[in-house]
Length: 413
Figure 1 (cartoon, one colour):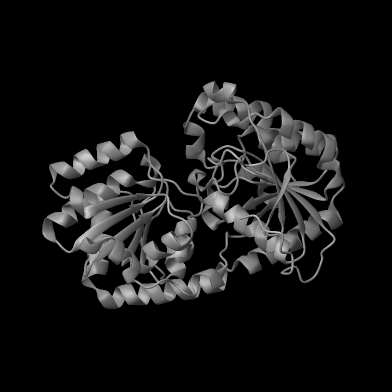
Figure 2 (figure 1 turned 180 degrees about the vertical axis):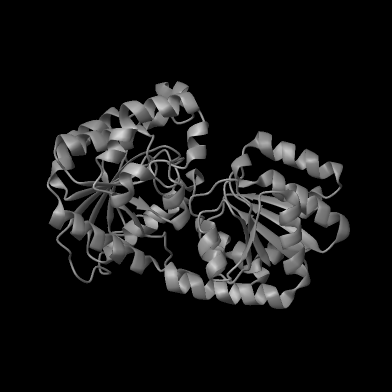
């Protein structure tokens, strides 16, 4: 949210960072990277770093959002630029092609110390990399899963053409590549020629924001039928890549056996997909036991975490999983697939159940935690400890500052 209060900046750091992102707060419907980036920038600002964000107004529903003007968001300067919707023939967002953003970059990129680019494919990312090279400005690329090999299989012709003509040069000439998990770094399809530039800093949370959860009863009061029931929580974009088919089929099987288990589906989804899922649930006479809440944020999202008993994310691909560490911080035992970026870290810390991407594995995982309360409590306790140890946003911000300093002290730009 916009704020003019800068009292939280304790020590000014002589460093000007320009962050380029195709979308930004509050366009969280585009996934965890938008949420994690806003949190990281806020943490950097709190540490005294001068952070400016150039982004587009994609996903912003408020018609009164100022464009091409700086907005102060908790110490971070954010500028939204309009994009040409004509190019939606290239994709649902037209790859955020923006003349005004390009003009601003031409004028101002040289006045920043380091440019941080989130993403690989969108126009803002591509033009930012080009102009950084043109003006010999060091830049960091954070792919956020977009360099997984499977990602190239989606719209493969456009992806490979864009990669060969533009994106590959952006990656090769970056000062550093920021990965958010061991899995993302290890599974990147460009590891061979960027290995020396790669570094891992995980996404983080403001842990204090999650220390005082709302009463467990709040959400159950809103949905009286949930009183004294077991709640399985899915919180993410509701689309096929998130393993929604696996989840629905596993839940249907479970619902045949137990009447006390309900499913809470939190996240944006299309009307077409919602209708399809409800039709499937109706065939099994359990449509009244699955709730689709839409996108929740702030206190409402915290109420969903507080009220739930188990968190699940059976994604077919996921570079990190912000909702996973949120759930862990809130004390929920988690079940995730081995395609979620932080599955290795969770397994190493015995902080959740790791499943394969199929209905049987997820069904068995949920049933295990419902039947074994002691195991669920142990995993939840380990999860909280793991988040406190590894995913504090202040630690992540400091690691990124140290990396920026290293780049600036060694760069030949």
